[in-house]
Length: 170
Image 1 (cartoon, rainbow, N blue to C red):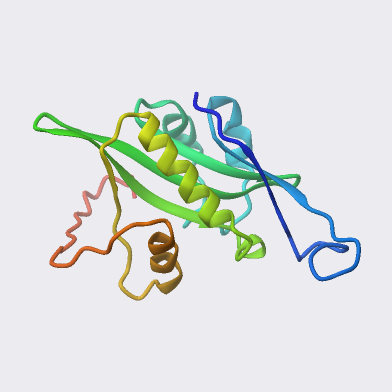
Image 2 (tube, rainbow, N blue to C red):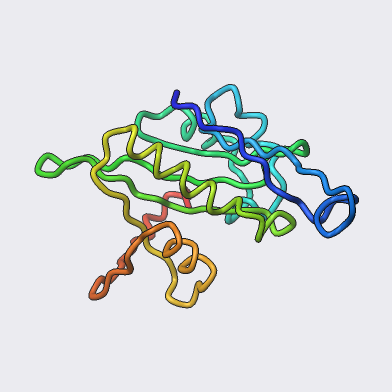
C-alpha cells in the first residue's frame, strides 16, 4: 500500500479555529483506504459519496486489483474521498479513470479536494499509469475548477454514452 503524508488543514466550522485569536489546526489524514477501513467507509456521513454506501460493494472496492479509494480522515471520520480505477488495454499503457472526488459540505473550501486530487494522481503514478482521465458535467463549475487547478486539460469533441443494464447494480 502506498502511504501518503498527513496534511493539516483548517476547519472554520469548529470553535477556536480560523479567524479567531489562538487558531488551531485540525489534522486531516489523506491516505489510500484498504479492507481494514471498511467500517470507516460504511459509517460515512451522507454527502461524501454521491449516494448511500452499499455494503455489498465496499469490500469489492477496497480489495479488487486496480481499484483505488483515497480518504480524507478527520477525528469525526471520513470527510472526503477520491475514487478511481486502473484501465488496462492490450494496445495502450495503463491509464487511470478518476471516477469522483467528494468532500462533505461542512469540510469544503479547505483544500481537501485538492489534497485528495493530488493523492489519487500520485496513486495512479505509483500504479504505473501513463495518464488520468475523467468526465464531469459541463455545468459543474467547482469540479472543473478543481481539475484545472490540478493541471488537467479540458478535452473537446468528446461525447459520453452510458447504458443501463437493468441488473440492479446501479
